Structures are given as structure tokens and as C-alpha cells.
Amino acid sequence: MSLLPGRFRASSRRDLVIGAITVVGVLGLAFAAPDDVGILLAALAVGAGVGLLALSNPLLALLLVFVSSFLRTAQKEFVSMEALTPAFYAMVLALALAVAQRAKQMPRLGVIEWLMTVYVVWNVLSMWLPHEYEAIDPVTGASVDVWRWIFSGVLLPIVVYVVAKSVLDDERSVRYLLWTTVAMGAYSAWVSILQFHGPKSLVWPSYIVDSPNWKGRANGVFNQPVVNGMILVIAFVVCLFLASRPDTKKWMRWALWGLAGLLAYSVYLTHTRAALLALVVVVGLGIVFAAGWRRAFVVSGLLGLAAVGANASTFFSSDRSAGGVGSSNEVYDRLNIMATSLRAIGEHPFVGIGIGRFQVYNTYEHVTWSQEIDWNRGLGIISHENELGIGAELGIPGLLMWLAILVTVFWALWRAMHDLPRDTFLGAPLALVGGMAMTVLVVNGITVDLRVLDFASMIPFLYAGMVVGQLDRFNAVRFTARPGAAGGGLPGGMTPDEVSAWYDAHPRDGADRAAGSTRGRGGLVGAP
Image 1 (cartoon, rainbow, N blue to C red):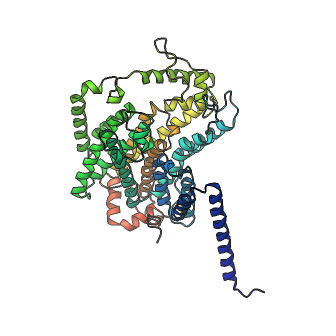
Image 2 (tube, rainbow, N blue to C red):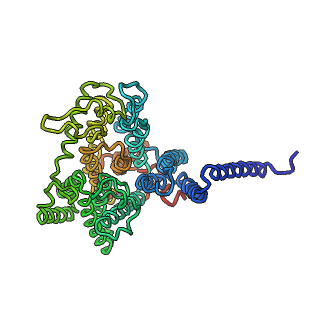
Image 3 (cartoon, rainbow, N blue to C red):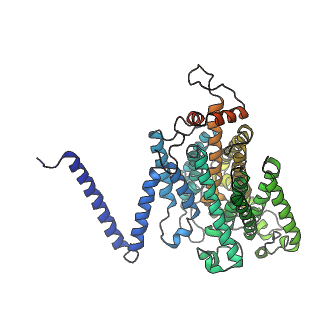
């Protein structure tokens, strides 16, 4: 018989197991990478601490995924392991734990989510099914990581959309997301402007100036001008949104307006037509739909027109390195790729050529758009049009599923713009921000297959999920049964203004009813 109490014995066994695992881990690192064991141990300790915090707080876990995706390329300067994948699984587990503990509500699943589920299944089936061409790099012969295509372009944005609906459930959590986006945009503008106007020693990571993937263009921390342009445009919109809120202090409002100007200039420095077009489109949407805060968009539009007019000869030239938008070579590339995509859809209309296989198909089955275009333009590269790339690899059913997701998400955002109150932080203006983020996705998808760019695929769906979650909670209050009925307490069929007034009069009750008596829990600080 042991002299130790049962509780002490269990604790001792647990400590022994943890100690043994730690010793094995340290010895393994010392054996595998003796020169880097110090930094690896430090990274492991920080990662373990952050991971434990993330598991206890789904909002922190979601923001960790957001930041990990933003810094995925930069972190390779320190360690080869990426943080995004473990952060993703930690986020899913954190939400599951929060739902099990009733700290968060299970996100409402509707038509959009079922379409997303079917689309994920179709992508996985495409990975498993046999196809004419193997998923390989036609130049090196190395295998293409097809699962990474699914993770980055399908699973990550869809899961983040669902998690955002549940986690971003109050003003505080939404503000954390918005200000994180502003910080990312400010940093991207910083490195983009200094890349051109120095001092370059203040640019980190150093590859932005030392070994950019696209010379003469603002690549940002992603080393990719399209993705850099996307965060700059979305952060521009968020700055104008926050500056227009009545509770924003005057000095902060001016700071946000100034940052918005730097962000717009940084978009120009990307010398990327898709990024510039996205900026023009969101400014136009703001002029049309931003009731109560459109003045900033009008001023931005006028300043943009003045800048183009003053620099017209350069802006419309074919010199991409100087910011000209008249270069035709990239247009020819995309036209030939589009012709090859249409050929693939015609030859494989049902199951497609297989996910992750367009590059090899475009090497051996490449065709030209017309006889006037050099046949070599666009040869042997991935699709540069999002929807046609999906259609070529997943067939017409996969393309229809993707289009159905886009249409239903935009419809939900449109409803949110019309149904949510206009005078609350989580109301119609925020819905317009979500709609603009999704518009940025569509505009950039015209020239790039965004499925290989995890941050570009994720951030629009993150913002869309945030908005659709507000709409679900708003409707849960708006259409509550009449007093006296089961679950009653509010008159049914209330107008948006009536619900907004009711929220103001009953802030705690409204929050509890909208979030299942859990509102306020699971914030960044954690459940009480």
C-alpha cells in the first residue's frame, strides 16, 4: 500500500509524464538541430504558452490565426515550421471547448454553410480521384501539395467564416479584429513606402528590399503585391469606418484619416492593377452606399482623380515599374491562360482536371487566345483567374458550388446592410465593410488564383462571417415570439429602429437573448 494520498499520486504521475515528454523533446531538439536548439526551445516555450491561452479563448485563437497568416512568410526568417496550421486547429478546438462550456453559442448553420460543406467535400474528392495528369511541378517534377491547396483556398476561409460568426459576437471582439487589421495595414504601408523612399534599413523582413519576388513593386510582408494590395485596401476601408464612428476621439480620427491616405498611396506602390481596381471599386461603393459616412469616400475619390490627372502620362504608360497600367504582356498571359482554362472545362466538364493540376495541364495542353498573341505567353503557370481556375480543376459542378457560395454570402451581406440598424457600431455601416472585403476578393480574383494565397482567401470571409453573425443575432431578437409564448419577452416582427431602441433600453437583456445568455463571455480576457 502506498503512503501517498490518491490525489498526490495522480498529480505526481502527471508531473512525471510531463517531465518525461519535456526531456525527450529537449533531447530531440539537441540531436536534430544542435546549433539552433536555443531559439527552437524559446519558440517552443512561446508557442506552448500562446497555444494554451488560445485554447482557453476562441477570440484569441481566431486572432492568432489571422496574425499567423499575415506573418507566415516572414516567420521563415526565424524557423522553418509555420504557425498557421497549428493555430488553425487550436482555433477549431477552442471554439468547440467554448461551445461545450456554454461560453459561446454554436454558430447558426444555414444554406451558406451547407453549400460550403458540399464544396469542401467536392475538393477532397477531387484530390482522391484519379486524373489524367499527376499533381506535379512540370519544371522540377516535384509533387504538388494538393492538401495545401485545399487548406489555404477552401478549408481555411470557410472555417474562419463559421468561427467568426460565433466568436465575433459583441462590439469589443469586433473592435479587436478591426484594430488588428489597422495595425497590419499600417505595417504594410510602412514597409511599402520605405521600400521606395527609404531608409531601406528600417524595412523588415529584409527580403522585401533584398530579394523581392516582384522587383519594383511593393510586395509587403507577403512578398506578393496582390496580397499586399488586399490588406492595404481593406485596412483603408476599416480606417474610414473607425474614423466615422461618433465615439472616436478627434485626434484618433485625424490619425486614421492620415493613415488611410498612406494606405491608398501604398496601394499605388504595389503597381498592381487588381489592387488599384479594388481601391477604385470600394471608393465607388462607399460613395453610393456609405450613408452617414460617405464624405471620406468622396474626398478620397477626388484626391485620387487629382493624383491620376497630375501623373497621367506615367500612370497610363506601359512601364509597370513606374506604376503604369498600360502594359499588355500580363494581359496576354491571362488571355492565354483563360483559353487554356476554357479548354480544360470543355474536355473535363464534370470532375475537371483535378485540384492542383492546372500548372501541369497548362504546360502540356496550353493554347493561345488568338493568333495575334504569342503562344508562349502564360505557358506553364497556375491559373490567373480564380473562377476559371476552379472550373478547370473541379469541373462545372465545383465552379457552380463556388459561385453559389459567393452569391449567398453577398446576399446575406446585402440583407445585413438593409436590416441592421444604421446608428449602432455593429449595424449597417459594418455590414458595408464586410461587403467591401468580399468585393476585394472578387476583384482580385479576376487576375489571380487566390486559392494558393491563404491570407487573401481568408480575410474577406473573416469579415463576411463577422457581419453575418451580427445579422443572425439581430434576427434572433427581432423575431422573438410575443410575450407569454414560449421563449417570449419581445414583440415579434420589430423594425430595425425598434430593435435598436430596445437594445439601448435593455443592453444586458438584449445581449443575453441574442447570444443565449453568454454575451460578454469568452472575450479576449477570457470568461469570468
